[in-house]
Length: 307
Image (cartoon, rainbow, N blue to C red):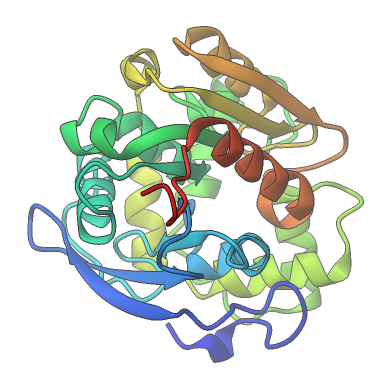
């Protein structure tokens, strides 16, 4: 994906990586991977959500890369990772395993942060051998494990069959999103962000989401519609922190509370007043701070002198 599709200045402008590589997934899918920061620093892996890309994590990368090795990748079909016919939770898990194996040394562990579908990726991979070998701790941002369409409040109706039917058609629409216009920004803000979101945050999100090909957007919407990863939550046996915005219409706080209750080792749930679904962009300092805290607590850093 061309960087010209994103903002080109400020905290949400995608930073240039120290290096780039391609990870090959189990089915041969090619995944674009970026590595930022010093090579010998503690590792953080970032998995973005539906319709997004590595650019979504720009604020976290810019901050963390000063003293962490930050690994961000484009989910298949998103950003600069080519589309694949295989769209499933198993494919998401395969892809994360491939990225971990391609970027981390044997025995090396990282903190993994997943937003929305990125969090679902973590749940899908939770029982995989490579995931368990390489994961020290997890941050789940604005995500859920099942019943995503039925629980969404994007359509402002009472919960029930009518709302679920309409939500399924809105989120699964094949219509092109078109250019980023004032109307498009208002729609995106309503559906995915809190009421107090700043214009530069809305602009960044709109440019990222509108860059996602509509066929990819539709294909993954069908996966999310049928998603059931409750078992994956129960298998996620590493320290896991959870963040959600109270104004999240896509994955309302009830999802995060249910995930936290089912986690074997939940370190806490943070509910952000007035914040919507796009927590890493809407509350960048808090999300980055949570990642830093997980690294400090769960990754042992060995100095060169003592190594």
